[in-house]
Image: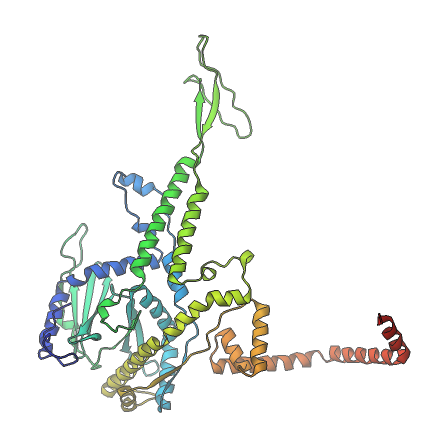
Amino acid sequence: MPPSPTKTQPPGTPPDDLAGWYRAIAEEVAKGLPNEQDRRLRSITSQDYYRRRGAKLIERRPAESEQDFAARIKRHTPITRRVIDILAKLYEQPPERTIDGDKAATKWLAEVYDATHADVVLQQAEAMSLLHGMCAIQVAATGDPASPIAMQLWSGWHEIVPFEAPGRANRVAACVTVDCCDNQTRYTLWTPDRFDVYITKKLTDGQTAGGRIAAHVPAESGDNPYGILPFAFFWGEMPSSGIDEQEGLGPFLSEWNHGLDVEASDLAQAVQKYHAPFPVAYGVDEDVAIVRRPGAFARIAAADDESEHAPEARLEYLQANLNIEAGLRNIGEVIDSNLQALGVPLTAYSLESRHLPSGEALLAEQKPLADFARKRRPLALMVETDLARACLTVYGRWHAAAGGSRGLSPAAALKAAERPVLSLLWPAASIDLPSAERDREDRSAVGMGIESRVMVVMRRYGYSREQALAHIKQVADDEAEVAKLMPAEDEGQDEGDDNDNDNDDATGDGAGEEDDTEDEP
């Protein structure tokens, strides 16, 4: 990070020389962000393990040749991906959003989020925030009134570097996005006033130095048309003590994943080299050709040795005594112990049908995940407020200058963006139970009056309220159509019921009394 020019100022005071602070950042960007390389490399490693590329990260042994290393089996266990996906549950059932006191802005925001698949972007952003400690969603104007906003996710420290405001360690005042293409790296420095692009020279084959040095490209730089940083940062934890403290689970999971991969690869190599039996011929002349026939004995001649102690010709197999089961069991025990330390239920990681727990046991084991997601809701509200503000501001500033707005005027958008009060209505956290127990729980909730059928449908299928109402209406319409298709069957059933009643009446009271007598002890 560049030094702050306002170390002597009280926290929160605007810097005396903000332009000088921006120049310090620009100089670091031109050098290729040297102060951020360690953290960016850790982030790249975490991303590789999350993307299931861990096999390529297994190192060559000191005494191993390149040929042996290339031929060696390399195993990868996707534990990093699995853990992050289990923990990132917040947006499995996205919330309903309302901008308090502004129905027009609420409607516009819902349409924009539907068009940009914002819930999918936010779900992936939550996963990346847990992995890297930080990620960001960039908002841009498209110029298309029908779909005015575009969103892009920058996954972590390797793709975006935020710079904290001087005197305010938990507020982002500038950021640099990093993207690589065709052996070149492009850095874009964003401030509320400008965006400046820096591009490296194209790397050549075998180049090992100078690849990060970038030159400013004035033709692709310019004034920031939005007047704000068009980003919403999603933190792994609330950055109360500063954004530099945001690391995420990635380094821990990567180190753990690497150890598992090395152990699994060593085990695979041992099986490959030593588990297959090694044939040995004793007391056989070198010129004798041994023909192996599956299911039949191979006849061989003894060595041409007439001495009294000449060895008898025989064939045997040598096989190492490998305890493969113990090696696999050790890997499984390491995974289980670390999952428990992370608070990840074993049933969420591996739910075997032969060990399926009861509904109450499953609720108890899965409850930590629901609690974890619930605790992250205030953080999500902060993120979504920033995202809504960015969308409204980008739309309002762009279309105020370019025109062509539709649905919401630029002035109304900018007014809503000034201090948006966003409310999030989250669906009730739920855990899938075995079907019979889930049916019983739902009937009980409806019977007690604490949930409606609409709420049950929303929870079961992940629907919004409108979708749940449409689902219930469709069920009723379908049942009415089925009733029209099968009137004869229903009438026949009714006639059968009437005949049964007639037979009961014909039996008389005596039969009933006889039955009562037989039932007496």
